[in-house]
Amino acid sequence: MAKVIITQTKSTIDRPQRQKRTIQALGLGKINRSVEVELTPQIAGMVNKVNHLVSVKEA
Image: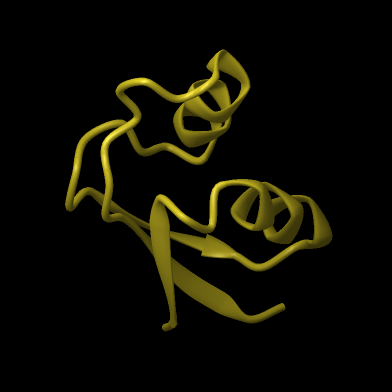
């Protein structure tokens, strides 16, 4: 599987609780925090749900 770097670019203030929990499940929570993860179908689905709050780069 490919590795990707996911960086939170926007705040979760005034976002639905579901999006806040998805950001937390990705290991994020503060702006400009990054994590490097394997791009599994589960991670891809989570990123798709909060793509307006994060940026994704290939590692």
